[in-house]
Length: 346
Image 1 (cartoon, rainbow, N blue to C red):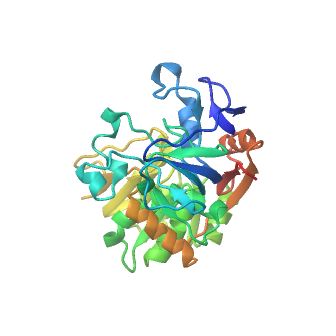
Image 2: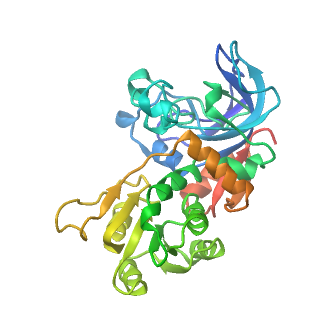
Image 3: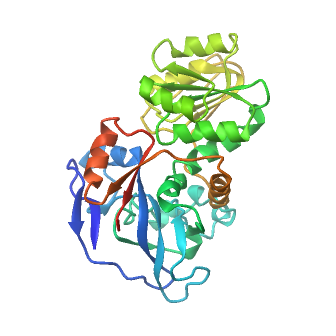
Protein backbone atom coordinates (compact mmCIF):
# COMPACT_ATOMS: atom_id res chain seq x y z
CA UNK A 1 0.00 0.00 0.00
CA UNK A 2 1.00 3.66 -0.24
CA UNK A 3 1.46 5.93 2.77
CA UNK A 4 2.76 9.40 3.63
CA UNK A 5 5.76 9.02 5.93
CA UNK A 6 8.13 11.24 7.82
CA UNK A 7 11.30 9.27 7.22
CA UNK A 8 14.23 11.41 8.33
CA UNK A 9 14.44 14.25 10.84
CA UNK A 10 14.52 17.54 8.97
CA UNK A 11 13.26 16.15 5.67
CA UNK A 12 9.87 16.66 4.03
CA UNK A 13 7.28 13.87 4.27
CA UNK A 14 7.05 11.62 1.23
CA UNK A 15 4.65 9.13 -0.31
CA UNK A 16 6.15 5.62 -0.19
CA UNK A 17 5.15 2.03 -0.80
CA UNK A 18 5.00 -0.12 2.36
CA UNK A 19 3.45 -3.50 3.22
CA UNK A 20 -0.28 -3.53 3.89
CA UNK A 21 -0.73 -4.36 7.58
CA UNK A 22 -2.80 -7.27 8.88
CA UNK A 23 -4.83 -6.98 12.08
CA UNK A 24 -3.63 -8.98 15.06
CA UNK A 25 -5.82 -10.17 17.94
CA UNK A 26 -8.15 -7.37 19.07
CA UNK A 27 -7.14 -5.07 16.20
CA UNK A 28 -9.16 -3.58 13.33
CA UNK A 29 -7.96 -2.87 9.79
CA UNK A 30 -9.45 0.21 8.16
CA UNK A 31 -9.47 1.14 4.50
CA UNK A 32 -8.91 4.86 4.99
CA UNK A 33 -11.49 7.18 3.45
CA UNK A 34 -10.16 10.46 4.88
CA UNK A 35 -7.28 11.75 7.00
CA UNK A 36 -6.78 15.24 8.38
CA UNK A 37 -3.62 17.37 8.19
CA UNK A 38 -2.76 19.21 11.40
CA UNK A 39 -0.31 21.86 12.63
CA UNK A 40 0.77 19.36 15.30
CA UNK A 41 2.43 17.38 12.50
CA UNK A 42 4.39 20.48 11.50
CA UNK A 43 5.50 20.84 15.12
CA UNK A 44 6.61 17.19 15.22
CA UNK A 45 8.60 17.57 12.02
CA UNK A 46 10.34 20.67 13.41
CA UNK A 47 11.79 18.88 16.45
CA UNK A 48 15.58 18.38 16.33
CA UNK A 49 17.01 14.88 16.21
CA UNK A 50 18.17 14.98 19.84
CA UNK A 51 14.60 15.66 21.06
CA UNK A 52 12.69 13.51 18.59
CA UNK A 53 10.54 11.06 20.59
CA UNK A 54 9.26 8.68 17.89
CA UNK A 55 10.73 5.90 15.81
CA UNK A 56 11.14 6.66 12.12
CA UNK A 57 9.83 6.15 9.53
CA UNK A 58 6.45 7.35 10.85
CA UNK A 59 3.22 7.26 8.86
CA UNK A 60 1.55 10.62 9.55
CA UNK A 61 -2.08 11.42 10.30
CA UNK A 62 -3.82 11.50 13.69
CA UNK A 63 -7.25 12.34 12.26
CA UNK A 64 -8.60 9.24 10.53
CA UNK A 65 -11.78 7.75 9.14
CA UNK A 66 -12.36 4.61 7.12
CA UNK A 67 -14.30 1.50 6.23
CA UNK A 68 -13.78 -1.59 8.40
CA UNK A 69 -11.86 -3.93 6.08
CA UNK A 70 -10.80 -6.79 8.38
CA UNK A 71 -11.12 -7.84 12.02
CA UNK A 72 -8.52 -9.46 14.23
CA UNK A 73 -9.36 -12.39 16.45
CA UNK A 74 -11.78 -11.59 19.26
CA UNK A 75 -12.98 -8.21 17.94
CA UNK A 76 -16.57 -7.35 18.82
CA UNK A 77 -18.70 -4.27 18.37
CA UNK A 78 -17.86 -3.30 14.77
CA UNK A 79 -18.89 -4.82 11.47
CA UNK A 80 -17.11 -5.32 8.17
CA UNK A 81 -17.97 -2.49 5.78
CA UNK A 82 -18.95 -0.07 8.57
CA UNK A 83 -17.97 3.60 8.16
CA UNK A 84 -16.15 4.78 11.28
CA UNK A 85 -13.90 7.51 12.64
CA UNK A 86 -10.87 6.95 14.84
CA UNK A 87 -10.67 8.33 18.38
CA UNK A 88 -7.02 9.35 18.45
CA UNK A 89 -5.69 9.66 22.02
CA UNK A 90 -5.31 5.96 22.81
CA UNK A 91 -4.86 4.89 26.42
CA UNK A 92 -4.48 1.73 28.47
CA UNK A 93 -8.24 1.25 28.80
CA UNK A 94 -7.97 0.26 32.47
CA UNK A 95 -6.98 3.26 34.60
CA UNK A 96 -9.55 5.54 36.22
CA UNK A 97 -9.24 8.13 33.44
CA UNK A 98 -9.73 5.57 30.67
CA UNK A 99 -12.68 4.05 32.54
CA UNK A 100 -14.33 7.49 32.34
CA UNK A 101 -13.63 7.70 28.59
CA UNK A 102 -10.83 10.23 29.17
CA UNK A 103 -8.11 8.30 27.36
CA UNK A 104 -6.58 11.65 26.45
CA UNK A 105 -5.49 11.76 30.11
CA UNK A 106 -4.54 8.07 30.47
CA UNK A 107 -2.32 7.65 33.53
CA UNK A 108 -0.19 4.85 32.07
CA UNK A 109 0.08 5.47 28.30
CA UNK A 110 3.61 6.85 28.49
CA UNK A 111 5.03 4.06 30.62
CA UNK A 112 3.32 1.41 28.46
CA UNK A 113 4.57 2.97 25.22
CA UNK A 114 1.04 3.66 23.92
CA UNK A 115 0.98 6.42 21.30
CA UNK A 116 -1.75 7.95 19.13
CA UNK A 117 -1.84 7.12 15.42
CA UNK A 118 0.40 9.51 13.51
CA UNK A 119 2.03 10.61 16.77
CA UNK A 120 4.09 7.50 17.46
CA UNK A 121 1.88 4.73 16.07
CA UNK A 122 1.33 4.38 12.29
CA UNK A 123 -1.16 7.00 11.23
CA UNK A 124 -4.09 7.51 8.88
CA UNK A 125 -2.47 9.08 5.81
CA UNK A 126 -2.22 5.71 4.13
CA UNK A 127 -4.45 3.44 2.13
CA UNK A 128 -4.93 1.23 5.20
CA UNK A 129 -4.33 1.64 8.94
CA UNK A 130 -4.49 -0.52 12.05
CA UNK A 131 -6.63 0.57 15.01
CA UNK A 132 -5.54 -1.10 18.23
CA UNK A 133 -9.01 -1.63 19.74
CA UNK A 134 -12.61 -1.37 18.57
CA UNK A 135 -13.38 1.01 21.45
CA UNK A 136 -11.35 3.61 19.54
CA UNK A 137 -13.85 3.60 16.67
CA UNK A 138 -16.95 5.81 16.53
CA UNK A 139 -19.65 5.06 13.92
CA UNK A 140 -20.06 7.75 11.26
CA UNK A 141 -23.37 6.55 9.87
CA UNK A 142 -24.44 8.96 7.15
CA UNK A 143 -21.80 11.62 7.98
CA UNK A 144 -19.41 12.44 5.12
CA UNK A 145 -15.95 11.14 6.14
CA UNK A 146 -14.09 13.97 4.35
CA UNK A 147 -16.05 16.72 6.09
CA UNK A 148 -16.21 14.87 9.40
CA UNK A 149 -12.70 13.50 9.92
CA UNK A 150 -11.25 16.85 11.15
CA UNK A 151 -13.76 16.77 13.98
CA UNK A 152 -11.74 13.95 15.59
CA UNK A 153 -9.17 16.58 16.60
CA UNK A 154 -10.04 20.01 15.16
CA UNK A 155 -13.57 19.55 16.55
CA UNK A 156 -12.95 17.45 19.66
CA UNK A 157 -10.11 19.57 21.01
CA UNK A 158 -11.96 22.93 20.98
CA UNK A 159 -15.16 21.22 22.15
CA UNK A 160 -13.32 19.86 25.20
CA UNK A 161 -11.88 23.33 25.87
CA UNK A 162 -15.16 25.21 25.43
CA UNK A 163 -17.16 22.70 27.48
CA UNK A 164 -14.93 23.29 30.51
CA UNK A 165 -15.64 27.03 30.39
CA UNK A 166 -19.42 26.87 29.90
CA UNK A 167 -20.16 28.13 33.45
CA UNK A 168 -18.36 31.39 32.57
CA UNK A 169 -20.08 31.91 29.21
CA UNK A 170 -23.43 33.28 30.31
CA UNK A 171 -25.57 35.90 28.54
CA UNK A 172 -23.59 39.15 28.45
CA UNK A 173 -20.22 37.38 28.53
CA UNK A 174 -17.44 37.53 25.94
CA UNK A 175 -15.27 34.76 24.51
CA UNK A 176 -12.08 35.44 22.55
CA UNK A 177 -10.72 33.00 19.97
CA UNK A 178 -7.08 33.54 18.97
CA UNK A 179 -6.21 31.77 15.72
CA UNK A 180 -9.14 31.03 13.41
CA UNK A 181 -7.64 28.21 11.35
CA UNK A 182 -8.33 24.47 11.61
CA UNK A 183 -9.33 24.44 15.29
CA UNK A 184 -10.24 28.08 15.78
CA UNK A 185 -12.93 28.31 13.11
CA UNK A 186 -14.59 25.26 14.66
CA UNK A 187 -14.33 26.81 18.14
CA UNK A 188 -16.24 29.86 16.93
CA UNK A 189 -19.09 27.65 15.73
CA UNK A 190 -19.10 25.69 18.99
CA UNK A 191 -19.25 28.89 21.03
CA UNK A 192 -22.19 30.13 18.96
CA UNK A 193 -24.00 26.77 19.25
CA UNK A 194 -23.34 26.14 22.95
CA UNK A 195 -23.27 29.59 24.58
CA UNK A 196 -24.81 33.05 24.56
CA UNK A 197 -21.41 34.74 24.62
CA UNK A 198 -20.25 37.43 22.23
CA UNK A 199 -17.41 35.92 20.18
CA UNK A 200 -14.37 38.01 19.25
CA UNK A 201 -11.95 36.37 16.80
CA UNK A 202 -8.28 37.31 16.39
CA UNK A 203 -5.96 36.36 13.52
CA UNK A 204 -3.15 37.86 11.49
CA UNK A 205 -4.85 38.29 8.09
CA UNK A 206 -8.15 39.63 6.83
CA UNK A 207 -8.62 36.43 4.80
CA UNK A 208 -8.65 34.32 7.97
CA UNK A 209 -10.88 36.82 9.74
CA UNK A 210 -13.33 36.69 6.83
CA UNK A 211 -13.74 32.94 7.51
CA UNK A 212 -14.22 33.75 11.20
CA UNK A 213 -17.04 36.16 10.35
CA UNK A 214 -18.57 33.64 7.98
CA UNK A 215 -18.78 30.96 10.68
CA UNK A 216 -20.26 33.27 13.29
CA UNK A 217 -17.77 35.61 14.99
CA UNK A 218 -19.51 38.77 16.20
CA UNK A 219 -16.32 40.86 16.08
CA UNK A 220 -12.92 40.37 14.43
CA UNK A 221 -9.60 41.95 15.33
CA UNK A 222 -6.18 41.72 13.68
CA UNK A 223 -3.88 39.85 16.08
CA UNK A 224 -1.05 42.25 16.87
CA UNK A 225 0.27 44.23 19.82
CA UNK A 226 -2.88 46.39 19.83
CA UNK A 227 -5.31 43.46 19.81
CA UNK A 228 -5.81 43.17 23.57
CA UNK A 229 -6.56 46.88 23.84
CA UNK A 230 -9.20 46.55 21.14
CA UNK A 231 -10.77 43.60 22.95
CA UNK A 232 -10.85 45.64 26.15
CA UNK A 233 -12.52 48.49 24.26
CA UNK A 234 -15.16 46.16 22.79
CA UNK A 235 -15.90 44.79 26.28
CA UNK A 236 -16.16 48.21 27.91
CA UNK A 237 -12.80 47.79 29.62
CA UNK A 238 -13.79 44.56 31.42
CA UNK A 239 -12.03 41.98 29.27
CA UNK A 240 -13.29 38.54 28.27
CA UNK A 241 -14.68 35.79 30.50
CA UNK A 242 -12.97 33.08 28.40
CA UNK A 243 -9.99 33.26 26.06
CA UNK A 244 -9.02 30.34 23.81
CA UNK A 245 -5.55 30.49 22.23
CA UNK A 246 -5.26 28.04 19.35
CA UNK A 247 -1.76 29.25 18.41
CA UNK A 248 0.04 29.11 21.73
CA UNK A 249 3.10 31.09 20.63
CA UNK A 250 4.65 33.61 23.05
CA UNK A 251 3.00 36.65 21.40
CA UNK A 252 -0.47 35.06 21.43
CA UNK A 253 -0.29 33.75 24.99
CA UNK A 254 0.68 37.27 26.07
CA UNK A 255 -2.33 38.63 24.18
CA UNK A 256 -4.54 35.95 25.74
CA UNK A 257 -3.52 37.01 29.23
CA UNK A 258 -4.05 40.68 28.42
CA UNK A 259 -7.57 39.98 27.08
CA UNK A 260 -8.71 38.21 30.25
CA UNK A 261 -11.07 39.86 32.71
CA UNK A 262 -11.61 39.11 36.39
CA UNK A 263 -12.39 35.42 37.10
CA UNK A 264 -11.76 34.50 33.46
CA UNK A 265 -10.57 31.23 31.94
CA UNK A 266 -7.51 31.38 29.68
CA UNK A 267 -7.13 28.14 27.73
CA UNK A 268 -3.88 27.59 25.80
CA UNK A 269 -4.57 24.93 23.18
CA UNK A 270 -1.86 25.68 20.60
CA UNK A 271 1.59 24.19 21.04
CA UNK A 272 3.66 27.16 19.92
CA UNK A 273 5.79 27.21 23.08
CA UNK A 274 4.17 30.19 24.80
CA UNK A 275 3.46 30.34 28.53
CA UNK A 276 1.70 32.64 30.98
CA UNK A 277 2.83 33.68 34.46
CA UNK A 278 0.44 32.63 37.22
CA UNK A 279 0.49 34.38 40.57
CA UNK A 280 -0.98 37.24 42.57
CA UNK A 281 -0.86 40.41 40.49
CA UNK A 282 0.26 38.69 37.29
CA UNK A 283 -3.27 38.81 35.86
CA UNK A 284 -6.71 39.93 37.02
CA UNK A 285 -8.05 38.27 40.16
CA UNK A 286 -8.91 34.57 40.00
CA UNK A 287 -7.96 33.99 36.36
CA UNK A 288 -7.54 30.29 35.62
CA UNK A 289 -4.98 29.15 33.03
CA UNK A 290 -5.47 25.73 31.40
CA UNK A 291 -3.54 23.68 28.86
CA UNK A 292 -5.89 20.86 27.80
CA UNK A 293 -5.12 17.93 25.50
CA UNK A 294 -7.57 16.57 22.92
CA UNK A 295 -10.86 15.32 24.47
CA UNK A 296 -12.72 12.26 25.75
CA UNK A 297 -14.46 9.51 23.79
CA UNK A 298 -17.94 10.58 24.88
CA UNK A 299 -17.14 14.17 23.85
CA UNK A 300 -16.28 12.96 20.33
CA UNK A 301 -19.71 11.35 20.10
CA UNK A 302 -21.24 14.66 21.24
CA UNK A 303 -19.29 16.56 18.55
CA UNK A 304 -20.60 14.20 15.88
CA UNK A 305 -24.15 14.84 17.12
CA UNK A 306 -23.58 18.58 16.69
CA UNK A 307 -22.41 17.88 13.12
CA UNK A 308 -25.51 15.80 12.43
CA UNK A 309 -27.63 18.72 13.58
CA UNK A 310 -25.69 21.15 11.32
CA UNK A 311 -24.40 23.08 14.33
CA UNK A 312 -20.76 22.73 13.25
CA UNK A 313 -19.07 22.24 9.88
CA UNK A 314 -15.39 22.17 9.03
CA UNK A 315 -14.15 24.13 6.03
CA UNK A 316 -12.06 21.50 4.21
CA UNK A 317 -9.59 21.46 1.32
CA UNK A 318 -9.37 17.90 -0.09
CA UNK A 319 -6.09 16.50 -1.44
CA UNK A 320 -5.16 13.18 -3.02
CA UNK A 321 -2.48 11.03 -1.40
CA UNK A 322 -0.06 12.06 -4.17
CA UNK A 323 -0.65 15.71 -3.22
CA UNK A 324 -0.31 15.15 0.53
CA UNK A 325 3.23 16.64 0.63
CA UNK A 326 1.80 19.76 -1.05
CA UNK A 327 -0.89 19.99 1.63
CA UNK A 328 1.83 20.10 4.29
CA UNK A 329 3.76 22.72 2.32
CA UNK A 330 0.64 24.90 2.12
CA UNK A 331 -0.14 24.37 5.80
CA UNK A 332 3.40 25.37 6.78
CA UNK A 333 3.07 28.50 4.61
CA UNK A 334 -0.23 29.47 6.24
CA UNK A 335 -2.08 29.01 2.97
CA UNK A 336 -4.74 26.53 4.18
CA UNK A 337 -8.13 28.02 5.02
CA UNK A 338 -9.75 25.66 7.50
CA UNK A 339 -8.49 22.07 7.35
CA UNK A 340 -6.69 20.06 4.68
CA UNK A 341 -7.99 16.49 4.26
CA UNK A 342 -6.24 13.65 2.42
CA UNK A 343 -8.31 10.99 0.61
CA UNK A 344 -5.83 8.08 0.33
CA UNK A 345 -8.12 5.82 -1.68
CA UNK A 346 -9.53 8.49 -3.98
